[in-house]
Length: 66
Image (cartoon, rainbow, N blue to C red; front, side, top):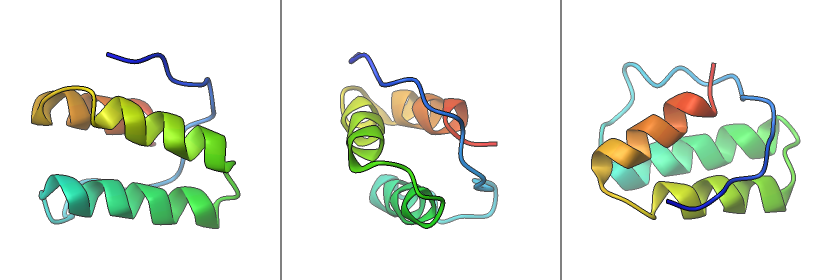
C-alpha cells in the first residue's frame, strides 16, 4: 500500500456507479478535477488504488470520498 497525500475527501456518491475498477477510478478522477483537486493529489489516490486488489481500491475510494 502506498502513502497518499492528505487531502479533503471529494463529493462523490459511489453507490449506484458501475462497479468496474476502471469506471470507479474514472468517476473519482473526473469528480476530483471538477472539484479543483491538484494533479498530484489525484495521482496519489490513483496510485494507491492500483497498489492492491479490488477491495483495497474500494477502501481507498471510500476513504477519499464523502
